[in-house]
Image 1: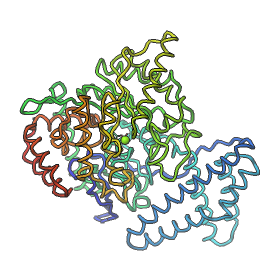
Image 2 (image 1 turned 90 degrees about the vertical axis):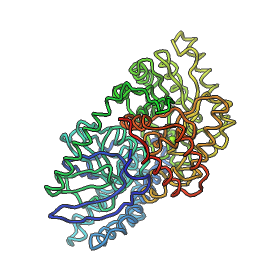
Image 3 (image 1 turned 135 degrees about the horizontal axis):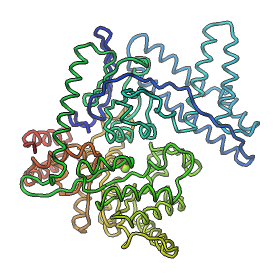
Image 4 (image 1 turned 180 degrees about the vertical axis):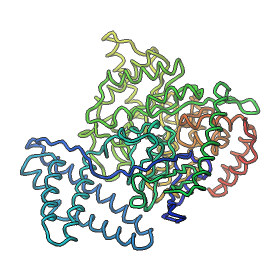
Length: 605
Ligand code: PEP
Ligand code: MG
């Protein structure tokens, strides 16, 4: 977590400050640490396009899918345009012309209309139609005498490939071919891309697009990959093969660093490694405050391979298992058996410590190509058919997940968590589905969790926080998702770099909703935890605990530092400070009160 910088203060800036060839770029510091390596600038080529015939009755839907991809491409280029305006000099002008040309092509009736006609007349899939059309247009350009016009062929290709990427949604191929120590530089890195990054091979990454609390940022933190995102001027400023430093805490990217700069960062890397090593000593130490209050610390898991790390840092369970990993980077849906195998392995790996499995939270910025026909892109994906809404509409999807969870629950303690709940009836519907699934499995003689797992609710929509009393009547536990709660309360897209500076969990409105939910849970005597990113940032620990929470779930890498913070904390003082903070109406004052309190704190080690 970005402990050195308060959330949302990183201002993306294009500052290719030069020092003997050294160039520096700045962006959002989203995943701490220092990575030093060789740049791999991901280009837009190399797409694997499959061709297939589309049945006559489905042509209209295929054209619709194509149009959605075009609209998405227009939005992406529009965003790049507004970022380009903030770069100075001739590079900005050139980039501006280029992007304007791309926008025009995306609106052009000859290109877009040509592709549409191909889908309709050849009855082929949209990807194949795009490739055929851009192939032909590029060929025509290549045959022209004028060098400028010839070069436009390449632009048509770029635009076409962008549309195809948006059709396929699995943006690019894997990173398997990269040499160890590579640093990935790209226009956009999706959560699905990040899931393919092996930390043994990828040292860190940086991208032009993305916000601080996007799932890509969360995945980077959980993989321990230093990352900076929302960086203006990145593409074109770095070449594959350049030496690059990613300063994931300071939000800086240094290209071709001077010898002095390199040795300073190498020293910082060594210091961080020493600190991390010293914190491993805390593995078996209970998270107890100086005045004797015990706090339960659990892990948020994105990928099954993190189970070993969770055990290694002494996590007392899994407070949030995001099941999206099973649906990413594939074209088909995982069946009940496959999901059961994956979950059972995690439950077994956690050796008797509870595992909280969340039902699918796809939608919004988390896209899955596997869900294909089940998901139609909405104009406002964050407010659309997301998470539990999708599960309740696609009952087969929900039933398969519930069955897999119930079966995995036979191997150890398991809880089921529901994302994006807004009403009581959604919880009741899922409970009914769970009971029906359990009956069906028992009839088949399949071993399942007994008693049935507790059913919990994510409090991550302002309406859910305000109706927490009602939800506490139907839920067995609450988990506060501060990431979405902040986003929906402040109307700030967590994945949008342009408004990242406004994303602030310390806004009094967000804190009041958190406090309201905690009080409802305490009154109803149901467990409550915080599993949003603030749980893993020692900056927020005193405040969350001061508000009455005794369970935190966070990315594995953050756990030792949060535990260290708890060991140095006086709960009574934290509670008093939380009371003072809750009387404030200015988030700047709240931040100052919290930071002052933290500075007085005594470290645990
Ligand atoms: C949250 O919204 O705070 C949360 C934990 O869920 P996710 O980040 O997966 O949306
Ligand atoms: Mg959420």
